[in-house]
Length: 289
Image (cartoon, rainbow, N blue to C red; front, side, top):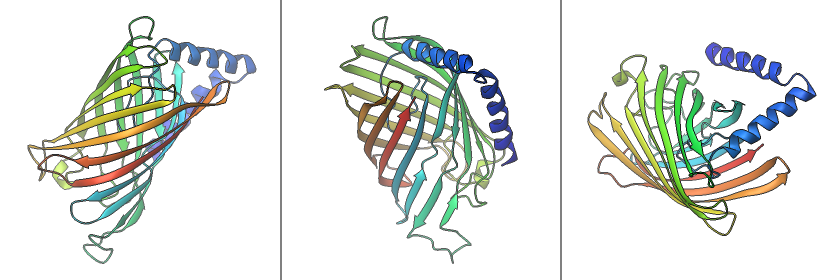
């Protein structure tokens, strides 16, 4: 928890220095607008982290049905505040989500708990290349993420160790701002501060996400996503899990001149032979600014 507070305090000081006056706030808003204009105007998918830079408050809700008979409900789903502090960077400060487990192992078995807060996660994005719909419709971005073990000291709710993830994200679109098709994809490699066999199989060594997304009738963004997780260490050594997401995002619904509301829902199911996950639902809500 101390580490996450240190990051939050440091960023708050930087943000305060940039926006300590009305002119500073106005300059910052102009910079954010220019940053968004320099990239494609696709919408963020339900599960895949977009290579686009975005500024928003996001809270999701997920319900997951596991193969062992337990059901996980995740309030917040590891989302939170996304800010653009400079033209080519984004900082994501995710709120520790609250998760419940019903069915499966009870609180009386193996000392498990069924309700707890999960770990704090942080993400830094740096955009290498981008062009909006009129100039090429593409983007290339790098991510550096960190998971800090602030959650309850059980493998179900906390990784128990720091996890660092480096990701390369890219996207290409076809069409205009009003309608079109795009592909967004990320490939990430995780490093754990310790042995993975001591914290279970919930952290893939390599994660590959790809989204095929359409834009129709101004506000509608239907999508299909594929998540491939490869586990290199621990009991799941050498195994792969593949999860599909079928979703629809509705947005951007204007709230003010500078803010929009976005809502989406997705259904997920596993299609691989090896899986800890059966199926589930995702609800996403966002307010961009």
